[in-house]
Length: 474
Ligand SMILES: [Zn+2]
Image (cartoon, rainbow, N blue to C red):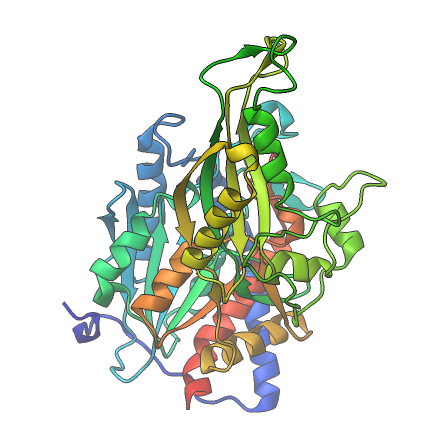
C-alpha cells in the first residue's frame, strides 16, 4: 500500500520566509523547544526505565516489547497513523511507520534510531542507578540516555515542534537489536525495500564534536573479527624436561600477534594500507586522552594524528586470548592457544580484502611450522557519506543555524553496518549521520549521560532540516 495515497493528514506548506522572519522563525522554534523540554525529560525517564537490552539471557524479552510499544505509541500520537511493530529475521521488532504530507512530489525523509541498549555492565560502577534517569550537574544519566533513547526523544521533540507543517513525506524506523549485532534490520531492509525507501535517511545514532559544536559524521570504519588458533604439541609438557626444544604454541601465538603492530603502534597487516590522512575536523590529542582515560605518561599510538589513526587507517585489537590463566597454571609448555582479533577498516577497504590480508599475514608469520587455523567470524563494511547533495547541505545549514557556528565533518571509528545496507538498498538516497552522542556521553560504558542542551539544539536542527530540505532540492 502506498502511503502517498493517504489523504488523512492535513498539511500546510510554509511560505518561503524572508531573512528577517527566518530569524524570528528560528527563535520561535527554539522557544517552543525550550517549553517542550520537560516533556522530553519525562519521555526519556520513561524510556530509560525500560530495560531494553535485546539479549534474553540477560533481560526479559518483554522489556524490548515494552520499549517498542512505547516508541510506536509516541509516533502514532504524532500522526504516523500506520505505525506497527515489524518482526525482523533475528526475532527483534522494528517500529515502522509513515506520515505522508499529501504532496506526491514532495521528497521522503526516513528518520532512524534504535530503542535497544547496551547492558549496563557492572552496576557498582554506576554513580546513579542505570535504569533511572538522574540529573547530575546539568546532565541526564542512565543507560541509553544518549545511545539511542536520547536520539529517539530528539526525533519526537523535533516532530512535535514542527507539527504537520513539513513539506516532506516522513517515515520512521526504530530498530530493536542494534547493539547485539545480530543484523535484524539489516536483513529486513532489502527484503522490504519499498517500505523504507526515502530520498534522505537521517541516522540519529552519532553525535557532535563536543557539546555546542555541531558535526556530521561522514565516515565509519568497517570491521573484521576472526579467531586464530595455533597448535604445536599433542598435550602439555613439563617445561623443565622439554622446554627449550619443544615448540611452544603460546610463544608462537605471541610472536605472531606481535607482528600486527610496529614499535610505534601502527597496525602492520601485510597488504593493508595504513598512511591515509583525515581531512575533516581534527581530534585534539589532549581531548582524546581525556575521552579515552589514557593514563598519565602513556603514549598514544601511531604515526598519524588521532583522527588519522581513528578514522582513516586500519586498527587491530586483540580482544581475547585463550591460554592458561595465571592462577592454576602449571610449569608446562602450552600445546594450543588461540586469540580473537578485531580489525577495524577504513572506507575504501573492503572486509573481504581486509580479512584475506589478515588471514594471509597470520599464516606467513607463524614460526616453527606451527599449525595455524583461522576462522573468520563476521565482517562489516566501512561507510563514507556523500557530502555534495541537498540533504547534506540542508542538514549542515540547519545545524549551523541551530548552533550559531558551522558544522565540522567527523569520522567514527566504530561501525554502523546498517548504513552500508541503506547505501546498497537505496543507492540514490542521501544518508546523514547526526545525533546527541557527543564524546562526554560515555556510550556503552557505565555512567552514560546526555546533555539536555544537545537534545534541544539537535531537535531544532532536525526541525529546520525537515522544513527546509525540499527547498534545498530545488
Ligand atoms: Zn547506538
